[in-house]
Figure 1 (cartoon, helix red, strand yellow):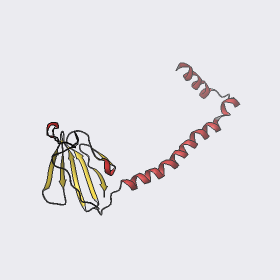
Figure 2 (cartoon, rainbow, N blue to C red):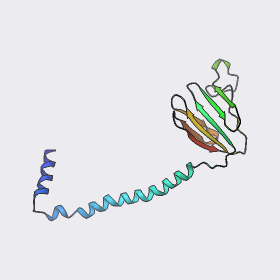
Figure 3 (cartoon, rainbow, N blue to C red):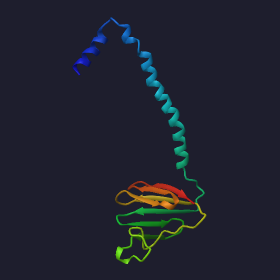
Length: 152
């Protein structure tokens, strides 16, 4: 630190300049600015695509709100008055042959086929993950935040 401080102070206070000190400023400027310009050209189209892909259309015919709780999910079909239920995981001792451990629930969320569905996902306590692997959907449920996705 002392050596760098001394050299910086001596270069700033000295009126003598050497051609070896000033000679490489052009290349340093180029290799600093050129990557920044490349990153800007890569980032702008990517940001545009992210915002276009995140936009959910207003033509959804069904809206479902999924709320993650400590040991269960709560579902609310907001297009139907009073249609809400909780979905609890089945205990291991009640599973039948062919059912999957930690995946089977007592009441499943049902959605119609060939219909645009909007999902609103939130949480009451901790971060959860709502997923339907066969549809390629996975959304985090975060307390205090309403995440949105859609599928058909």
